[in-house]
Image (spheres, rainbow, N blue to C red):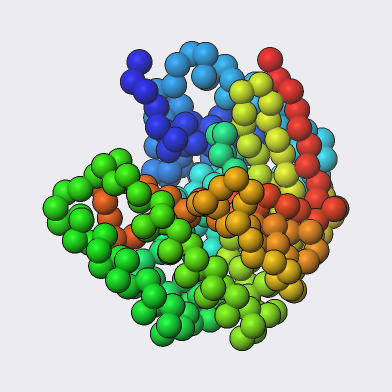
Length: 300
């Protein structure tokens, strides 16, 4: 059996969720390449993993059907979305549409994976503009450009990340420090735009249910930012950044704490074997408003 990567596992779970919905309610299937890829990934799984996907999918979808009467509508259609939709502010993997009322709900299905974005930093990426429509400063780019220039030179030599013994102190930490300083400066420039905009960038422009499969349990979370879901109250969106700090006992993870209960983790790392002139974040909400609806189901 070929060892499956995170992408294959994630796509397989998307197909498991979609299949469970199709088996639970009358619904039309929108056949596209994403549905086919997800099905192929599912078919590549071991029989044991297929059973886990089935049990996690069954438990989570039965729960959502019991809580959200949207699933009781006629004229429903289901589709799995392309990965490209995430780049346009839609983090939902699965869409269920009511073609009669032109309404829809979405599901983000993840296999042992809590990050919401994997954004990159480089000397050519204006993260402020991309994330919340505020340009990064000239000083920020002046600080980071020499570091990424050096990484580009290492790439031309074919150097591997694992062969750089001091990569954290030489590359990760200075970039993370520059990012933290620039975030602070951008916040001082327009507090509401940053605090409000960054959450919308991370969680997207649409409400959705997030289903996260672990070994033996599945978690369902209602990210009801705009009030369009029937399970889970509408969540408050932050207006204020309270603190930027390093995670305890970590030199690669930054924590941004906002009002309304939100806290976001930014873990910087490389995402390749050979050195590249960019670094990547795993961005994950780790603190939530007190009214967040979250349900955990054990499955066997």
